[in-house]
Image (cartoon, rainbow, N blue to C red; front, side, top):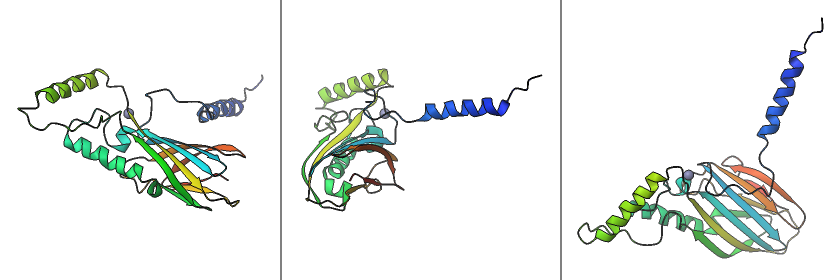
Length: 204
Ligand SMILES: [Zn+2]
């Protein structure tokens, strides 16, 4: 009687399971509105001396909620994150060369339209009604997510030495545990997962 090689079958199915766990290929864009809380995404493009960085994270992990800001506490949290992200020199540390930030845009529009929340109950009929409206909207779309993003451009010094970027996950006032980073340079491309333990990405 032929003996079925159980080990072989198990080995084979384990191999298939491993293949299925391989992260998505580079260039594959994620679905709009789908994210994992605690996980941010980052794309770095280095063209000669010009470095462009795109950061996007779940609002839940950046400001602590994903609904439209409805209280002064909400707005304070958004402003705090805005200030932290705006300070590119604080978020990114460059190793091997010096890079100066030339431009930054922080987009918090998914959770705040920039308007103050009216705290006066009597005079605040309009905003009160709006708050209810947006609350109901939120309840109907419990599965919907909001992202906060930032776009940076840096100009780096002319230099042939390796260029690495350290992302200050720990310094940020929010709850991003992991950053899925993709990078493209004149000479190659790659992907890496950054965390508090591994916060440095080598580009060149
Ligand atoms: Zn979410």
